[in-house]
Length: 204
Image (tube, rainbow, N blue to C red):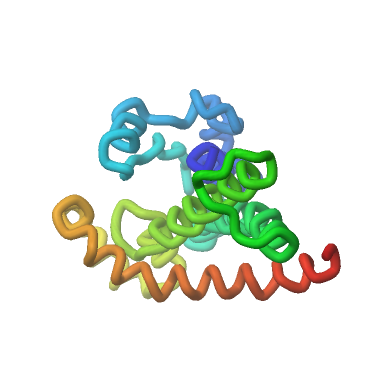
């Protein structure tokens, strides 16, 4: 669900900017079968790290290519932050009314709490991971709208080497990745809590 919504968001924003490519490839949909990559899905089950099929886009359709690429790229991580926000509401509400629920409890409230909590954690981490400015993640494409073109294209020249080094770190030294992501996770979670807690207080 998280991967599908992430990729759909890329496709939708690109379509709204005038690019029909994703729609023509059948990717303007929330159907997971259209987005999941077979090997990437298997890797999720084996190593808890995986990926979906990248959405095909054509920046030539955008009026402002740099701005368009940045908007399409940021749409993915923002979609996961949105999912994390919505899943944080039942977590915060149940915790306020009933207290934290253990994973070993199987009553209706506990199941809702734990499913929402896991979904929240997945989406926060997926958003932060994709924001990292490393090829081929969304963060590297977001840089295209921030960095001067000369500096960005210089980075693109070494994209394959950067990607290989990054994947080695992910698989061999995952603790390094966790350390890098931790402050960004804190920022995202703090922002979500700032909105969620006042909403829940109105409901309690």
